[in-house]
Amino acid sequence: MILTVSTKPYADQKPGTSGLRKKVPVFQQENYAENFIQAIFDSLEGFEGQTLVIGGDGRYYNREVIQVALKMAAANGFGKVMVGKGGILSTPAASHVIRKYHAFGGIVLSASHNPGGPTEDFGIKYNIGNGGPAPEKITDAIFDRTRNIDSYKIADVADIDLDTVGSFDLAGMTVEVIDPVTDYADLMETLFDFPAIRSLISGGFRVVIDSMSAVTGPYAVEILEKRLGAPAGSVRNEVPLPDFGHHHPDPNLVHAKELYDDVMSADGPDFGAASDGDGDRNMVVGKGMFVTPSDSLAMIAANATCAPGYRQGIAGIARSMPTSAAADRVAEKLGIGMYETPTGWKFFGNLMDAGKVTVCGEESFGTGSDHVREKDGLWAVLFWLNIVAARKQSVKEIVEAHWAEYGRNYYSRHDYEGVDTDNANALVTALRAKLGSLPGTTINGLVVSAADDFAYHDPIDHSVSKNQGIRILFEGGSRIVFRLSGTGTSGATLRLYVERYEPDASRHGIETQAALADLIAAAEEVAEIKRYTGMNEPTVIT
Ligand code: G16
Image 1 (cartoon, rainbow, N blue to C red):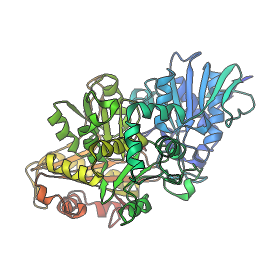
Image 2 (cartoon, rainbow, N blue to C red):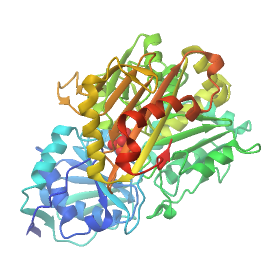
Image 3 (cartoon, helix red, strand yellow):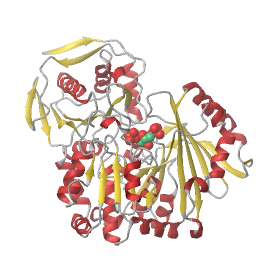
């Protein structure tokens, strides 16, 4: 039986950088998830009888919302839902399933790298038929709908057994519970030289992956241990847990420090990698060398033809504005297009669909290509292993050779988390007011060449996205960028991005924070971060 249930709108359902993310107790309010899911359906047209993909990263509340979403999809007229066994689908795997089976779209339940648990974070995101995050036009329509929604539709039936692969009927709609790993693992095998990576590993190259008790565990075990022959135990924290084992599933130098320290130790592995809650982020560490996400994009692009799936070369590169310009130099050398977009993977979709770019990346530990329409953590790890196998060099040798050829973009991000929202907004407003007067002036001895608030003009659909980050550029190519995060769930997070280009190879061995010290001081001088945030130092430095 299909029920139409009366509801009242919630005022706070505006999707952020990547879907709606809130604390679990917020989602547990009466009809909160139902309202948002109905608003998604009400913002779409033409899905009658079509297929929807549903999956999540296995975090706390995942199973409950999947059951609700299934019953609402049936009540709203979808013909079929494909859902990962156990409610599991990594974000890139969901993107692939949408594309492979020509689904109308997908609902991905995740708060990505944010912690999980009864008082931690949850999220709902809608992806369109190309497999990518819904563009702003759709997320704006969803938000508008949440503000005046008065009812939702749901099938009044029993829960589906999510733990058995197979086809089931739910109020006249087919539910297909699929193995979440196979399609994705098969895709990876078409892109990378698995025999070469297998012989690298069997030759003694030691690889470890830390899945951070999150969604990539089953994927990494299948690919690294089963298909590539790495010894059992090479994938650590491989069982997805609803609370990620109380950890913060964010693969960076702070939250994946144990892995980093292990790879850096004398008898540690040769290569370490980590992925986040929903499997779209990655961190790559070689012995003696952490690869920054910005460098990783540049180096994957420069070495792309090592991998069979990219043998023909790449069409172009895109990066988010705060990501370093290392990839720009590669694009210039290859004579291909380079695109600078706002933060958010959704901005890459149009460029990939139009065939203008093949690889994309963000400083926030995200790298990917047009094989799907999401960033892809394991894809990046496999790309690096493929490059190491093909070049027969260590990660450190590959990175240093790249810097010697192109110069080094020293880069760091400083996060100030949990800042009072009004104070964070006041900092941005004050900075914005100064922008016009900064060019030509000197900040901490550095001459400002330009200053603006980044606006993006999408070359494909011609939409304009304004206020995407304040950039202050200095003579010589250094810059500082300020932005407020769009993914946090408590207070505001101020992000400061710092970059210096150093062409001289004899100066490539400086410790990163030391190499950027004058720019960091300039940022404090111009934005008065300590005064506005009330913090003497960042909460996270990556
Ligand atoms: C999301 C987006 C990314 C973005 C990142 C950080 O990643 O998909 O495009 O770079 O958030 O965004 P912000 O700086 O606004 O917090 P994820 O992995 O959380 O989905």
